[in-house]
Image (tube, rainbow, N blue to C red):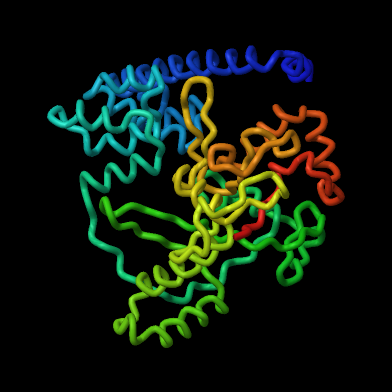
Length: 380
């Protein structure tokens, strides 16, 4: 609690500086840790510690989780053959997950080029890079019924370990009575049943231009897909599910972009014909189209180091010169910002306390003082 309170007194710039320095230290320590794991593994020193394998030593003696142990051992073994990996890990150019995923594909011949391309990449970008190196065949379109998910009690669910397998446990009831159906008792306390959550949707690159997408849907959506497949037989004769979904998503995307960004193939007015004076808070549709095209559908915020925000969702139109202070609707005066940076610049323009008060009373606010935060309907 004291540390938390003391951090609350640290100025913003100092807090960011400290965090960056702690991260640099953490990366150096991580690289040293991986190097030590690699040396212990090479010398097979885990055997003298009563461990049958390096993995067992990491989980049972060092008390790493299964995932932590796997990543560090894979990274350590790769770094034994490619020592530059430890340097890249220490300076932040590559992370443990990237090292583990790239390890099977690294050779002495390709490592310089491959590691240069992998620098500062996210996990998904690394997977796409691997799909380019070792493309796999397209996944067939499949729609099948899954077995009903098991219902388990909350305590048993809490006992699941990191691998997702249920841990063993003995549950006893007073007097040896059997628990009611759908309910288990732990130490005589009734516990409501809990459904095992469905696995999240996965997107896996197969090649540079193809992805495998897997998710679980309900019976209602399954029926809708079947109806859509029947209606689209003329345009998709083979009933390919990917082609059907692509057309449906394309149509939905066009409608949403038309509503949100006024995108249309036949605009009624151009930018030169639109009134950009600050007579109201409504942005002309032509301005919205031009801003979206200029900013490439991405947040335009750039920090002091020249880094541009990567967000492409929850975008809002922002007046660079606040509308409440006389800002107009010209192309130069409006930019796309994500919600986070729109809020941030609103705090810069109006003050943090004023914006905090606005958020507390958002439902009642009708004054234009926070106009840049509000959704702006299109107007031709």
